[in-house]
Image (cartoon, rainbow, N blue to C red; front, side, top):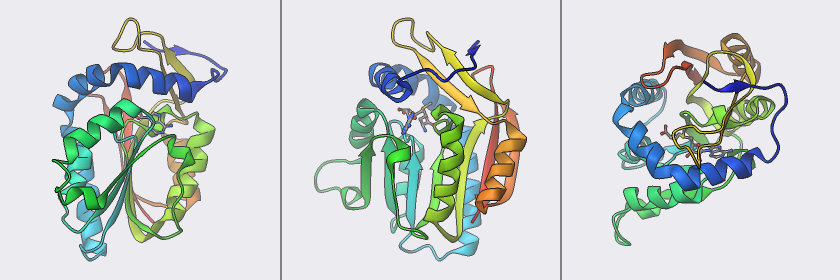
Length: 231
Ligand SMILES: C[S@@+](CC[C@H](N)C(=O)[O-])C[C@H]1O[C@@H](n2cnc3c(N)ncnc32)[C@H](O)[C@@H]1O
């Protein structure tokens, strides 16, 4: 169980990076077998997108892509798609490169850009993206940053573009675990506005929320809000 605290800890990004750098493999082995739910929501968003856009020259962005399996790989299965995948952790980005690009001749190398760093440091021209994905990643930002990011994502998307993500269902200023998945390296931080405020902020940012469902997590004792939203 995560400790609920009222102050946001210092150096969150550095500490999260250190944790994911150190325990990327542990996390990936734990989570990849339980990817069905993530894939289902991604497929719903792609289906909606297919109804509003021509499937050519698509621009996809994934925030907190982890090791790229299976979500970034699914995005790359669209042969015309240019995919930008970002993660704070150097280890995760290195694993994603290994998992997604099969050597220098692989055509994927031409249309996949892997960016290591804080998702809140990213920038894209207004109206340039077709789909933005953030599974189990935006939840690691302090919630004031989540609000700012929602506004930025809305600007980056083309009209008719989609955003698919999950957020913690319950409101929490700052939830910390010292030993999440790993007794030595598992310091972890999450934050959330909760279902109603997250949805309200999405509407304020200019999204039309087409799916908002809550579900208990398949492996954890947490509950998530899953959203698909149209710009
Ligand atoms: C729980 S994992 C989720 C990974 C993948 N999306 C998945 O569904 O398995 C969270 C990921 O978000 C990344 N992350 C955490 N904070 C981030 C930030 N501020 N910017 C970019 N990535 C971040 C972590 O390094 C980690 O790989």
